Length: 191
Image: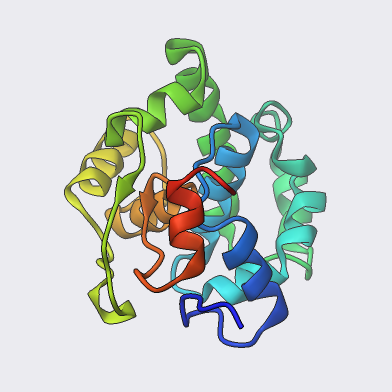
């Protein structure tokens, strides 16, 4: 049996997320936006809660198309508040719409959101060497800088802890434990 990080437990969806997505360097703007949105909705909740609602989020938020989301009006925001398939939080829904607008401005300024966001790790993955979950930080100097810059640009729900979770998910940091089989696969580019 493969040795993996212990946090997915034996939940099949969490294991699939760990094995196929978490920590894989991500450079697709739409997926980066999806992770930004989902990490914002995770604030105060478990990732498992968000992951189990991910398909509903994709449907409710037009597959995380920032152009469509940026154009949402109050009627659409109100309908999202009635959608039991997602996390119904008025502030987070409003933030998602506002963040889509900021995301589009960043794309225009930098040519892509990818070019902007990866600057915080110098364009490559930070390879950490944690032996146990208790060693994993909840923030870093890079996530502090990312958070401050995103907030300055108008993003909401992007504190340093949320930014660090985003960096882990998007492969900007490799926080797979040293005995996890995915750690070496990601380092060698076999994702």
